[in-house]
Structure formats: structure tokens, C-alpha cells
Length: 240
Image (cartoon, rainbow, N blue to C red; front, side):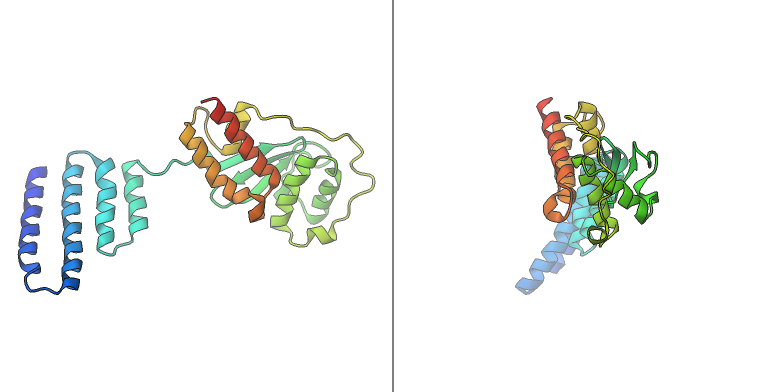
């Protein structure tokens, strides 16, 4: 069946080629050659598809259709996803970072940052559920926790544009000793990068590249998050 389809397509190609280039202008020849190439590629992709080689047929078909002016990027994405060869995405599409007082989660797709307070008066509450007064109270209580404060301030920058002007530190807060977070464990490193344990070196580098663009301080992100991403990447790559 595959060879019958290929033979019919080849016949159509030869008939098209026989009448398309005679007496044509150079510009027309280029355009028609492009169409002919697209038809040939489609023929190849059909044969490959009928023989079960979807992983090769899908991108060839997408490229051929793009030569006809049909949306290249969207088609390529659909074909490769259908064939099961799309780009690797981390499980759940999130990264998580813990500090002494916060458990933060970064959504890879939207870039949204949220988290849960893990100790103190607001323990168990999510940042998105706190009102402005509660956020100010939390901010004041974290003055001596550099890591937690950095994460909270990154969240505040995304939610409240004028918080740096309005918030005032509470003179009675922050009398405890600073809480250190220590170095990352291997399990924590995978969570920071949003990867499952056992991810390949290529997946680690890809996840790091994608996420560092979102959280880098030069892009208005968090220096602490950026440092954690770098630490997680270095730790996991050294294990490979």
C-alpha cells in the first residue's frame, strides 16, 4: 500500500514538473521549484508514515507544509507532539525552593511565584491568600532571614508595585538568630530545576537554561533563586 501511494505521488510530481518549467521566468521557476520540493517531501513523509516511522515523517511533513506557507512553527509542534518527539518538559512544570520560613513554587509556563509560610504566626498560609497587612507583617518578621526575605521580596515585586515605599519594618520583629538554609541535597536540586530524579545531563542543562532566563536579577528576578538554580545544576552535573 505504501509503495502504491508513493508511485501515485511520484507520477503527479513528474506530470507537474513536465509542464511547470517550460518557458517560465527565473522567479517563477524558483517558486515552482519550492512547490515541487514540498510535494516531494510530502511524498517521502507519507511513505515513512505508512511504514510506521512517524518520528521521522512528522517533522518532514511539517517542513513541507511550511513551504506552502502554512504555519511552520505550530504545525511542527503539533506533528512532533503527535509523534511523541516533542521537547522534554519537566514533570508538573514547576520548581520548588525551601528556606527556613518559606516553601516557594515557580510555575514554568506562566512565571508566577507563590509559596507557603512554614513557620511563625502565618504558618500554613499561602502568600497569595495574605492581604497587604499580613504580607507587611511577614516581611518585617523575615528581616534577619536573607534567603527567605529575598524570595518574599521577589514575590512582592510581582504583586505590589509600591510595597517598597509603603512597608515599614516592625521594630519588635526579627530578634531571633538568622536561619541558614544549608546546601542543597540531590533531591532538592531536582525539585529546584523541576526535574524527576535520574534526569539526563542534557535535561538538566535545558531546564537550567530555560529557568535562569525567568529568575535572573537582570530580568527583574531573584538573585537567590538564580543562585539556587546554578547550585542545583552544578550539583547534579557533578553526579553524572
